[in-house]
Image (cartoon, rainbow, N blue to C red; front, side):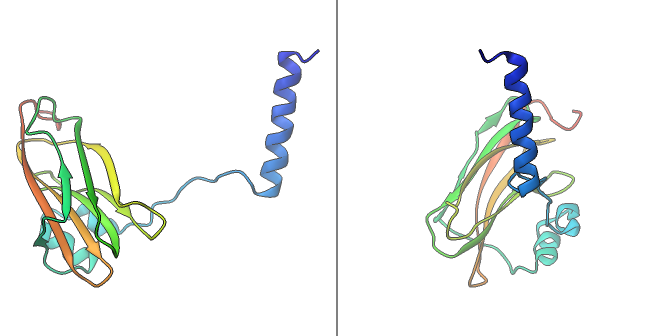
Length: 152
């Protein structure tokens, strides 16, 4: 009869075996530029990333609410069907740090992400696509915040 104690002991043995073989996942390490996440404006961010001036595009889709009742948790999303996307960014123009999220994309990753960002006040939210050919494309939307998420 398999008891709870035996099941836990076997699970621990399997985990040790997998760890010894290097088959267990390790902690993920961020590889983004600190200067990018510390940038206060969009031109500073583009300079930190080594990217050019963004150009508005209908091919980038930004999903965000018109009104966010609580700025601490604003659901936003970015997606595109364009080929050759290297990185997708979510920016909040009036936040202390303009870069809220960055997602690396390759041919095995669908360029569509959803997350929640913190917004201190009503601001433009931008979805930016950094392309393999050097183009920088974006879509933007103003999100009105009724209760600030940064202590307001």
